Length: 138
Length: 205
Image (cartoon, rainbow over all chains, first blue to last red):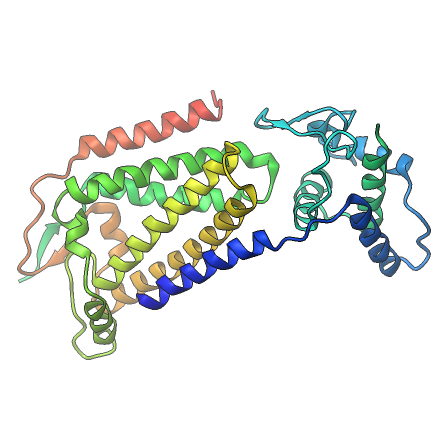
């Protein structure tokens, strides 16, 4: 009994510390991280491309949803969840200073949303292109 | 002389299986935004069931009351040890280890449901509640695994089908009395309310 309680307590405490110690970064630092990963995934990688990111963002990739289905065609606007209708804060960094400042959150949502839109994880090239686009939208 | 004894009232059984199904369903719909509505609906249902159980643990029939399966840690250890002895301890209601599983499941379910609601309503620290939500879900799954394993082991050792008892309410026992009422109407109301809630929330029909 006692050990289970301690385990729960320890896990709860570590959760608190984990959330406190999540490093804040700038979108550019997160983008640089994608560039480093993209190079390891494909040695021929050159640069990210905002236009390619925009196409990716608005494409349904053969399924029913695109990123824009929830985040709208203009990422500077607030979006709306396709299932729950709940509002979603803008994705464009010019419209929302909190976007792409928490690497853990960035990874979590790319993983979930790439799964929903593409039925797979996204490559670092795709993530970098989309982020370049979202940083370029005014 | 073994007799057929009514142990679990109907509300306790409806609670048990609704909790099990809603937790399983919510776990399976956790990773996709496509099932977000279902996930949230099952979370509300789970919280509602736990809320009922907390009241029923004080107001319910004898074997459903918390007092009947709240054992000292030494009794829990003693029970688990006895399982490895020639004469395993037998309890008509929840055995001491099963009781621990129930308190843990209720506590974790409460933490899981509450953190989920706070996340969905965007109240409080999102990062903290996200961690709590994930950790409590995985701990709860772990307790469920131990609980199911315990049920199977106890069923074999005591030669009684505990899973069937959670459906029928009846067990074979000596020197034990049936609970006087099954409260079938209350169980039926709970089941109907659960189905109605899911239909309305998910906009089915």
